[in-house]
Image (tube, helix red, strand yellow):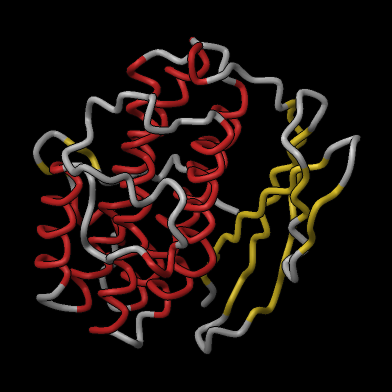
Length: 263
């Protein structure tokens, strides 16, 4: 049996000059009006021994001529803050559950190859839109926005700027700590919540013609689709025949999504 994991890389290319290149072939250049953003998804298929056996890459180039922060609605500004916290939640929950269930490789694969890059993408959006102390995030509960420019490794795991995210983290870790099966179900829950939130947020960004936010959020949603199927596969390998669909509907949220794209 095989599962799929996604690694998202953003390459920002400018017609002016390159300013850096790292070992993952991520090229970063000045964010100018003439730049283009290449969003690349590397889909790696791994076997039960966590060995990569197949890779495929898909790229999409979109213009980065986007509005400044002054042109974003308050709701969309708050959406960036919320998504920064939500992607951190997934990263932190998966790392915590992997400590408890090291045989469930989905947690470390997705945290390292998916959620880490998702946090980075949101950080880059916030920096590009110059959302600084002059911008009022009305949905922030803590005085500091640690996810804005702090290295991911230096962020305090399990601590968030939004009370709703904080409670969700605490509840999900508690739920996942009861058994490995429950932990994998938590993965299904997180990815469905992400997809639902991102679908709403993409529509909001489209209405404001915030094209780069749309592109990045679509990349995040594509990753969530793949993560959902990785957890679904993990459940089925452990005897849960219906995979994520075994969760059914909870508090009005449907966790069974056979229509999600599969790569």
